[in-house]
Length: 152
Image 1: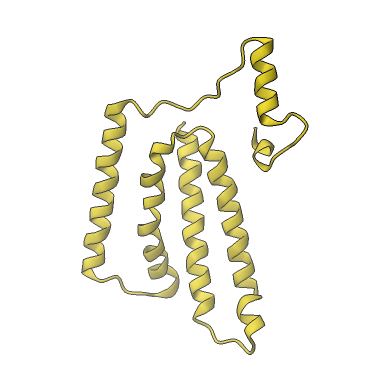
Image 2: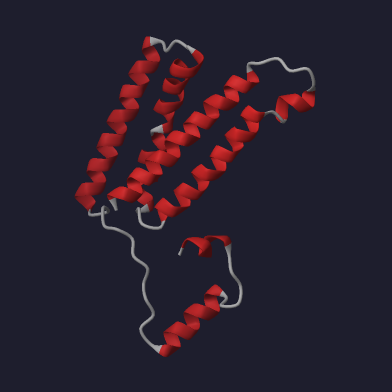
């Protein structure tokens, strides 16, 4: 399960990077409205968001949903840090205190998950009999293929 948590954290990290890229693009002046929205930086950013979504979907196949607030909360720290690195922004002391509160909340939340036994990896229930298999394939729609089926 740890590699899927790492995959999800990678997804959050590249999503934060893409958000800062969009801000960098928004800070520029363009010759026309179309160039504001159709430039390489914006297109690459949305491509990164798409990849981030795919990575999150893959991670959610094995990581319990209870981890979502903690893992997604990391973005509240990463976005300003990328802003400092890429845009040379300054982070005030109050925001650093806020980062500490967010990290403390993540630690407390995670310790509650560990204590409650929610750290168990998700597994799909396998149908055992012919009738259960028929019901499962009918519910899924054996002839249809959805986007999430690509990651089975």
